Length: 397
Image (cartoon, rainbow, N blue to C red; front, side, top):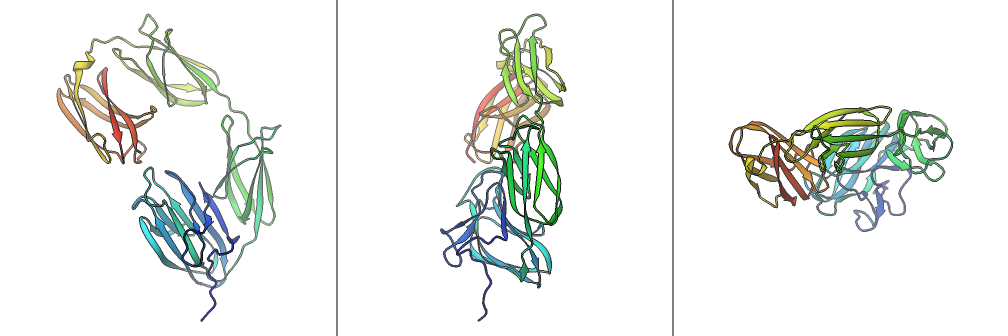
C-alpha cells in the first residue's frame, strides 16, 4: 500500500483552488465519491459558467486524476476539464461517479473545471461534482493581493463592476474590490464599468508584491432623442417608434421621446402606423440632443384582405413551428417574432412573394443571436407591403 495524496475536501478547500465565472464552486456534503464531501459547481442560469481551477508548478511529471459526476441537460450543459486552456474532456447528461486521468509534464500548469449552460432549458440537478483529485508532485506558486480603488475623481464609487483574474467583483462602499491569491503573471487584463460612467480597461503585471490599482471613472454624458411624427401636415398619434431597443408610441402631438441615450453612431430607428407607410433610418448621437422629423404617408391597403388565413402549428410548440399565410398581392414580405416584452428574437426576410399561400418552418433553436429561444409567449408579426397582421405563439421547449 502507498499513501495517497488525493484531495477529497473532507476538512477544507485547499488554497490552491480559485474560482471564477458567474458563480463559485462550493464544498458540499450531499454528494461524494470519497468520504462525505466534494466540490459542487455554482448555481448558474442560461449562458453562464462556474469555474474551479488550480495553477501549480509541477516538479515531477505524472498524471492528474479526479472523479466527477454530472447531472445536466444532455448535449447542451457540460462539465469540461482543461489543462492550460486546452479541453481534455467534456461530459453532460446523467454521468455517475467515474475517474478521469491525464498526463502532465513538469512546469507551471493551469488545471480548470468548468460547468457551463447553453441559452435555455435545465434538466437533472443542473450541476457537476468533483472529488478525490490527485496531482503530480508540485510546489504552490507565490500569490499576491490586487486591490482596485475606484472613484469618480473625488468620491469612491460603490457597485462598480471590476473584471480581473477570471473573476467579477463589485466595489464596496469604499470603492474597493479586492482579489486575493493572484499568481505571478504579466499583462493581466482588467476592466472597470458602472452604469452612467465611461468604462476603463488595461493590463497589470504581478511580479513580487501586492498591487493597488487606482481607477477613475468619468461620468457618461447622455442625450435625448425626440421623434416628431406627422402625415406631412398634421401630427400623428399612436405611431410606433422603435429605437434604442425600446418601443414607444407618439403622443397627441406626434412626439415620442427617448431619454438617456449614450453617444453612438448609426443607431437604427423605425416608425410604423397601421394604414401608413413605414419609415426607417439611422441617427448619430454625438454631443447634443437630437430631434428627428419623420413624415409617413397614408395608404389605401386593406390590411384584413392583404394578409389572411394565418395558421401557426403546432401551437403550443417546442422545437419547430410552421407559419402559413395567404397574400393577395405580389409584394415584399417580412416576418418578425417578438417576445412578450417586445424583444425581437427572430427575423425572416422573405423577399417578394407572389399572390397565394405561403409557408415557412422555424427551428426555435435558431434565434437572431444564433441561440435557442426560451419558453414563453411570443407574437408573430407578418408584414406584406405596408400592411401587417399578428398571431400569438406559445413555446414550451
